[in-house]
Length: 244
Image (cartoon, rainbow, N blue to C red; front, side, top):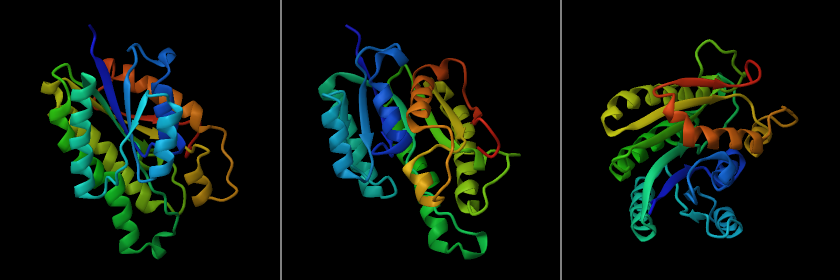
C-alpha cells in the first residue's frame, strides 16, 4: 500500500499560501493520491476554517515561525501526525511573509528585524528542524521569494528591506541544494512578481495587477509536486513583467 505524502505550507491562512494548500488537495495538479496537507500560520481562526472546508484533506497547526518555541512545537506536532497517518514528509513551502512598504530613509531597525525573522531566519531554523523528518526518498523544499530579490530586476520603491532579505532567501535555496543532495532533497526558489493579494493591497492601496492568487497557487502547487524532478538549486523568476 502506497504511503501518503505530507507537505507543510507556511503562511497558509490567506493569499497565495491558502491557494497553494487548496490546490495541493486537488488531484488534477499532482500525481499522488490523497496527500496530507499541513497548514500553518499565526491566524488561528482562518486556519481552522480552511481545515473544516477541506473535509479532512488539511490539518491546521497554528504557529509563528519567527518564535523558536513555536517552531519546536510545530515540528513535534508534525512528527506525531506523520506517525498517526502513516505518512512520509515530502514537501515544505516557505510562503509566510510580511510586507512593509517604506522608503529606505524611514526604515527602522524593527522593520528590518521583522523582515529578517519572517523571511530568512524563521525559514532557515524551521528547515533545520524538519530535515530529519523527510523520508529517505527525499522531497522538495520550496522558497517563495520575490522579483524584488531577483538580481537585475527593476525594484519597487519602498521595498528595500523586503527585497534584500527575499534575495537572501533565494541564495539560501542554492546553498541548501548542495548540502541536502545526499538526502535526495531538492531546494528551489521561486521569485514571484506582483500578485493581487491582501498583503499587496495593504502595502500599495489602489494598485491593481493581473495575476490572481488562485492562479499562482495552482502553478506553485504543481511545481511543488513535480518541479524537483527537473530543477534543484535554481532561482526562477515567475512574472509576466518587470518588476512584476
